Length: 112
Length: 116
Image 1 (tube, rainbow over the protein chains, first blue to last red):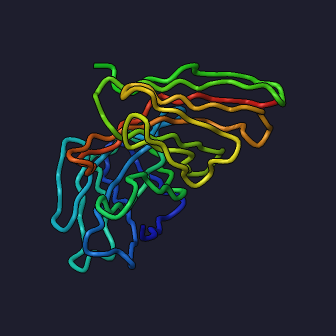
Image 2: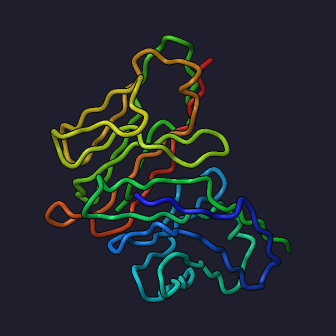
């Protein structure tokens, strides 16, 4: 599975948008881009995923660059509950055993 | 539908003791995974299973064993606990169709293990 690069940490103010970047320059054509987050003392939880087109759901939006070498997770209005470690993960369902390969992620702090 | 459940939530072991971490899913999923997470790090795969009776090693399998006698249960066994196994253990399971994973992974709440 291809590698991803994320900033170690980011800060945001409550109720402001947050853009979490992820670089994945070696992504293959069949790699899906997944985002998970891990709240303190909890297991990871799914946020969003996409392949080529931008995606929206109730939690966030995912913007994928045209060349797919980078993506951005967008939280439209950060809340204190969004303080977590966010992981950007690439997965090729057809070519792997299906497990998620976690890096260190980006620790997001939200200030009131 | 409880999803993925794990027991116990916390456990302290002495060096050399053994224990079994329990994981159960009620979603009828074939795939199940065991990860460990050391402080400040991402999760690493210990073992995984693609169905009842089938298990395989992940990235860090040494010191652990697993079994999968039913679809629902995927216990992780530590035979001789060592301080290096102090970690938080997560069980996870995605849905799949015809052997292809089709959905996100659902994680359990974790078991925090300390070996002294």
